[in-house]
Image (cartoon, rainbow, N blue to C red; front, top):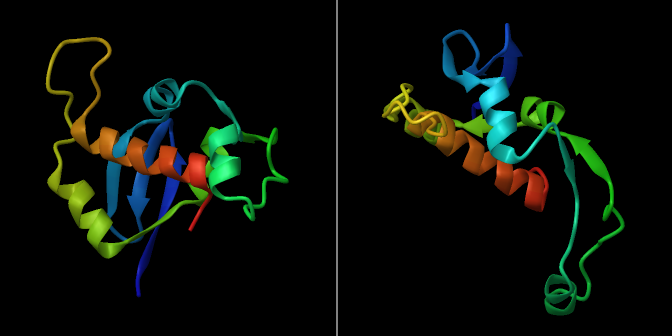
Length: 116
């Protein structure tokens, strides 16, 4: 199964190998995530619901850009990214492109749950 890497070049996030797919500015992605660092936390409800869960990484702070550069993606997800517009749909300064938003969703899932 082919996996596609994520990388940053000249301030822009890309996915791909031979043909790279532009995701968006790394600065925008970091802003949407909430900053350049992410601290791993588990709620009391999560700990009760999953008593066997390893929470030894709680309190660990990870670099968001380092984390996104470790992400790899399957062909189906990359095709879905490619199908989403790369342009911001409005002049709203808080808006992001749909493709960037989809990528940020996966990044947040990885930050919250760890890499697959």
